[in-house]
Length: 160
Image 1 (tube, one colour):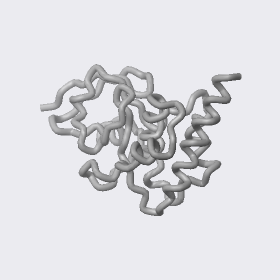
Image 2: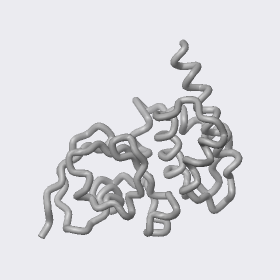
Image 3: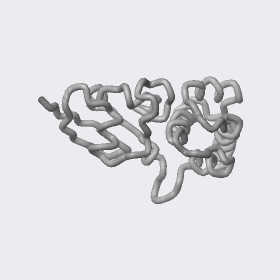
Image 4: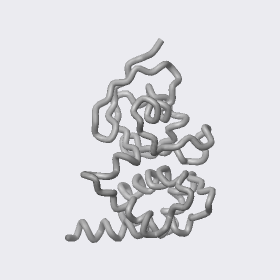
């Protein structure tokens, strides 16, 4: 028997009927057509399904949809505002921190959580935050560069 789940996704209140055991990833992709988070390993190990729940990164492929009732979920689609990419998304493009693109949304969401908590992270902090996200193409140095670039661009915006 399905249950009603109410939560916020990218700032919009949602009410979804979902069967018990349905994952957040399935609800996002199949019910809400938010396909940025990807199903990689299906075991919460690769990070391609990372979204933010109340500002913290979670693996949506292993997160029961019912567990986000009353909470705020942010997906990669929720970072852009008024048709403009977030500075972090722009930084990934500028740094060439994506190749096949499969891991990109999860990487960006993990980095977004880091930058919200630590606006000016050093390389070790970035590496620690990103270690649970796997890039099959090996663009790790460019990912670190992108996060550092976003950090410096945000400082410039906040000082303007």
